[in-house]
Length: 180
Image (cartoon, rainbow, N blue to C red; front, side):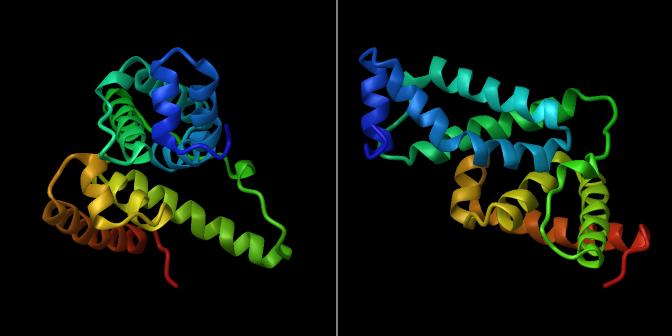
């Protein structure tokens, strides 16, 4: 099943072949989890949100339109789940630096960890909408069109939010004392 296209796996799932949906989960779980982790900054929450996104996708699979990429449809669900979780969260927590693995020399690891911490703190200071646009564009390398589809907003809105978010992120980094 690994060589089958997403749309074929969706069709098989709708016809009762649960292994087909398991293949979709295996195919996209890691990338979705990493994206959610960047947004919510909590490993346990990211795991829960990713799983909830897959459950929601499975429950709503009949509403998927094959003319769109399955991954974009699934991505939209998981991003919306992430944003909803952030809205319901009372306070944010920092990402555990132990989660960041590396094979670089100790000086580079320290610099990278310090930079990551500054970026994570600055990202947390952005609104969930601005944070999502930055994560999708700069951490997931999605196009403006893909981001617009995922967030269900016009492309111009994505560009505007990204411009604003970059300016705010730069300001937040400076306020936190990061210079490089």
